[in-house]
Image 1 (spheres, helix red, strand yellow):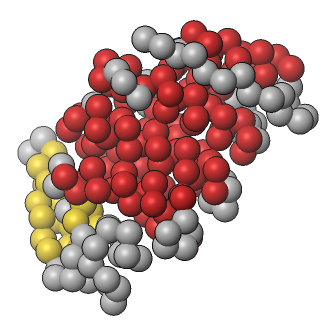
Image 2 (image 1 turned 180 degrees about the vertical axis):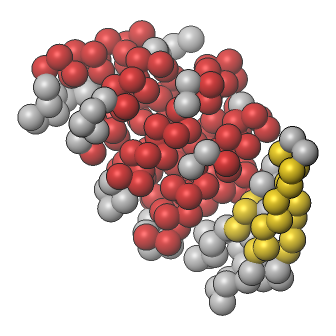
Image 3 (image 1 turned 90 degrees about the vertical axis):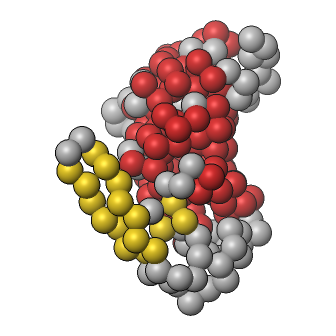
Length: 194
């Protein structure tokens, strides 16, 4: 797998040890190492989160096995947490959405379901609400949500829908009520869980 990533410029004020770990994880394509950096306490700066999301996208972009490893390593929760922590940083949002989109595609139902149920949907929905239609972040979120829609995990539309999700022996009903907006993805619509 070719993970020839562009060397990033040093991030001002970044702990040299953390910067070294980030560079090493990027060069080796270490998904778990990148996630560990994003999980650090206190939570790293937006620039670190954005750099890690960018690196994660590049690492998972062509490998279903690596995408599944990302999901198993609780990557959905880590990326979603970073997105929700820095809601106004368009680069964190755009790169976070790109990772979630690619994982939803490559890890198939396993990845898409994890994104829908483990924080990804909330992070993607926040991007749609907080960024203007046509912005890079909004477009990236719409793309990720469209993959979730392909898996019938979210829906876009004007009519209310009721869908049942089985979880073991219990199930929950989510009612999607129409928004007074256009019904297509990217036209200001907000996705609803099915």
